Length: 388
Image (cartoon, rainbow, N blue to C red; front, side, top):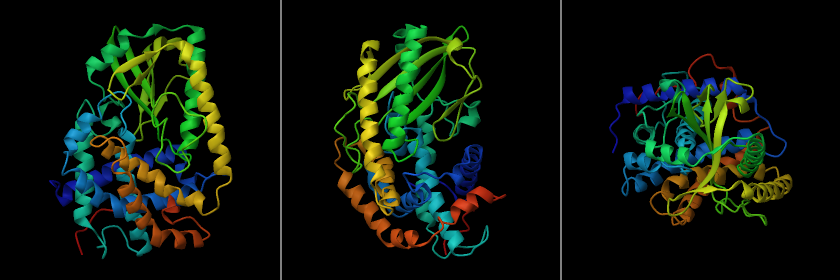
C-alpha cells in the first residue's frame, strides 16, 4: 500500500505538526487541566495505544477496503468516522513517537534506534489518501482552502437546503439551547475531548448565501465502558443545518469552527434539525421533538458526570485506552457495522497500554511532551531520519 517516500512523509509530518501546534497554542491546549479527568496522561496513553496497535489493525482493514474508499464513504451527513478521527490518527501516532524521541534524549534529525519507518509510512500514507478522498476539494487542511471544510456532495447539500425552515427568534433559541446541551453531553461522554462534534462547510447556496452544518455523533455509544446510561438519546446522530448570509466561519484541523461574528442570529436565514438513519436516509426532525432530545441528553450527561466523579486516580488516565480505541473502531464500522471488530481492537489497546500505564502514573509530572508542546520554538514533530 505504501506509496510515500521518506521526504514526502516528512513534509506531511511538518505540515500537520505546524497546524496542530497553531491550534493548541491558540487554545492553550497544552496547559489543559481538569478536575474530573487526567487529560494529559489519558491522551498520552491513548497516543501510545495508537502508535503500537493501529498500524497492525489498519493493515488488516486495508485488505478489505482502500483508504480512498474509506474517504469516499465518510462523505455523508453524520458520518463516523469524520475529519477528527483522521486528525486523531495523525496526532496520536506522531505524539507517541515524539515522546519516545524526548525520552531517548535526542535532538531533531538524530536517528532513533527504535524507529518504525514502515509503520510511519503506512499510517501517514493512509491519512494522506483517505483525507484527500474525503474532502470535496481534494485538499488535506482547511487553511489550504480559505479555512473551509467541505465534505458533502452538493446533492446532499441541496437536499438539506430544500428542507430548511425560515428561522425565527423562537426556533433559533430552541435549537441553540439544544446544541449547547448536546455539546456538553458529548464533551463529558468523551472525557473532555471534542469527539462527537463536527462543523463543516460552508457550502454555496446561491445569492451570497451559504450552508454550514454542525453534527453531533456517537450519541448512542455502547463501546466505551462508561457510556451506558439509564437516559438514552433517541437518535444516534443529529445535524443542525443553517443557511446564513454575511457570516464568516473558519474551520480547523480538529473539526471545530470559529466565527468572526460575535452574534450569529442576524445572519441565520433558515435552519433545521436532521438525523441519518442506519439505512442512510436523511430525515428532518420537527421542532416538537427538540424538548425530548434535550431532556434525554441533559439527563444522560448528569449520569456521566456522577460516574466520572467516582473514578479512581488510575482510571482518570486509563480511560484513554477506550477513548482512543473508540476513534479507531469507527473506521472499521464503515466495513463491518455492528461491533464485529470491537473486541479485537479493545484487546490490542489494552495490551499496548499495559506496560506503560503504571510507570506513567508513578511520575508526579505529566509526560514531558506536554511541556514540550507548550514551549517549543521548533517543529512539534521531528523528521524521520530513516530506519535504524
